[in-house]
Amino acid sequence: MASVSTRAGDTGGTIRRISALLFRHPRLKLGVVLGAPLLWFTVVYLGALAVLFLSAFWRLDVFTSEVVHQWGFSNFETLLREPVYRIIALRTIGIAAAVTLTDIALSFPLAYFAARIATPRVRKALLLMVVIPLWANYLVRIFAWKLILSPGGFLDSAVHFLGFSLQIANSKWALWITFVYLWLPFTSLPIYGALERVPSSYLEASSDLGGKGWMTFRRVVFPLILPGIVAGSIFSFSLTLGDYIAPDLVGNTQFIGTVIYQSTGVANSVPFGAAYAFVPLIVMAVYLVIAKRMGAFDAL
Image (cartoon, rainbow, N blue to C red; front, side, top):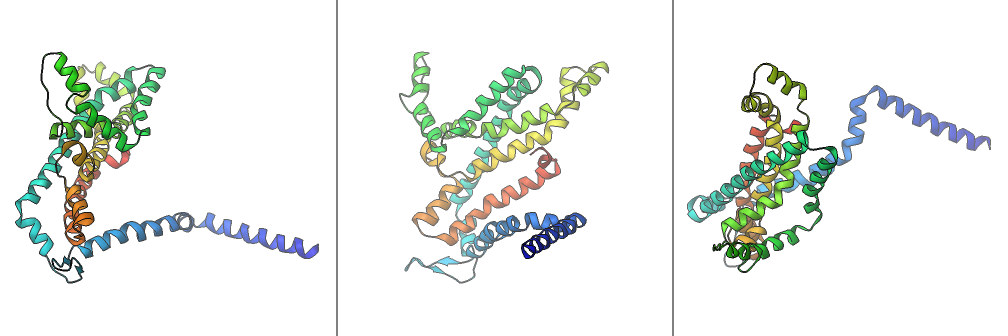
């Protein structure tokens, strides 16, 4: 019995000494807590990016369909030489920007009403309606909009009942509508959070100083919620930029992700797909640098 209690006392003393050591060295404690996740992140994410970077400089043997591990810039030369890839890149970036601006325009009045006007019960109902679509499967939502926008679908029938004709199935307009719906919750919630954090005393002070509604919004509200707007735009822009399923199912068009999928999965040209993947990576890197300067990460 004495030996058992002695071992228990030694174990308890060791735990106390380790706890005291971690308490005296907060950075060591932080390293112990985050060491394993950071190591996993480094190996999986940064390692995958490193492999992507290396494989972009390899080439595909057109006769054997095997990847040749020889350094070269043939994939990047193809991207710069062939205009079709520039057109696809510009189309992807343009639609992503249009979707982002539309989501911001739709999110602001909804977020403002929920954050500043609605009662707590109405606010909860609105936020629930915004979040509920996220519970449905991504493909289910895409196919739902494909049916709505198809010839003879709900939208076509409703417009035809009013005496108009609207044929937007399998078009960029259909793709734009689908993307706006898909990423609207990701844009609305950061803007709502930014509006909710605006102190009411600031609005009262602006009113006391003679500021009208538009002036108060432009000089007081907008600078305070700008990080939230940029934070929401990161989600909608990046998710649209990297999508390859909706463009094929709804828009019947090619995005950067579509070309990458076809290159790696169909043509087995992994090096070319890796080289083309650098386009959205560079675009998002520039976008994130601008967003960081605007304080968007503080609103995430």
